[in-house]
Image (cartoon, rainbow, N blue to C red; front, side):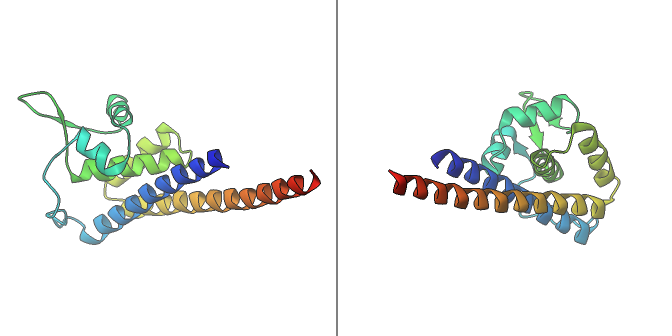
Length: 157
């Protein structure tokens, strides 16, 4: 049961990331060019992104390496610097990867978002979120039946 609970917790964390992605995309769609991120710092380090999103820095580096993300570099120390737009893309990539989308599809979607077709990105992110909800629901049903089975086995002894 502990293994199942751990899987449920990870899936729920993925769901929270997906909710953030949808929210960020909807805010982008509403503002259409307005500087809506004024409450955020201008640039983030990879460590800050990883801590704030729960997405491993190694995954972010990989996405940068395969050119899913375009990242600035600090001229002084060579560190990657991420702006609010890159943060949105990172959260969206994680959401889509958790839902089973492949890299070429994610690249296409990110291209659409960059070209301001945010409504398509919102639709896909919401679809991914719905898939996560269905998976969570199925896991809970499975846990219920496992619990019933364990109780029956306990009574047989």
